[in-house]
Length: 140
Image 1 (cartoon, rainbow, N blue to C red):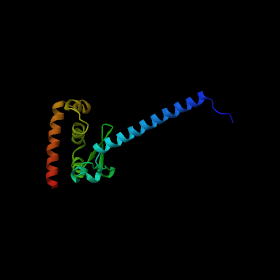
Image 2: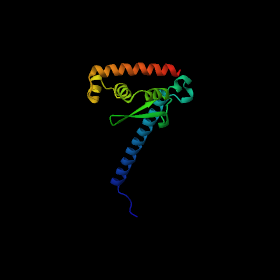
Image 3: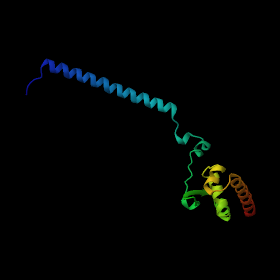
Image 4: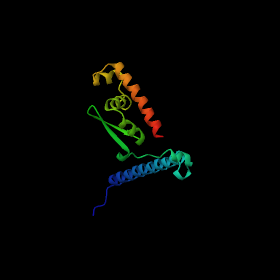
């Protein structure tokens, strides 16, 4: 085995010194990050219950949703009472309400699709809303 030259020893020592500086810097950065997290993060067990309650997520299941077909598009409606009331309307009135409130169409857009005047669309929508109100009040 050959003995390393003085130049090779110097290079090795420089490399060792550089690696020690890099490792020391990485350790200091890690410790600094841990301190920062300790200052800003709170464990769940220390949070007040009212705040933890805001983290809740409600899952939606297809069983609770009714899908209506409106001009070739599907419109999903949640709520059993609302769906039952919509089912009791005529198809035209139901479609007008679904296009207006679920598909966010204007009366003019609805009138164009159904090939009626915008006044007729408005009149049908108001009539459908009144009918829905009566159906929902009767169901209570």
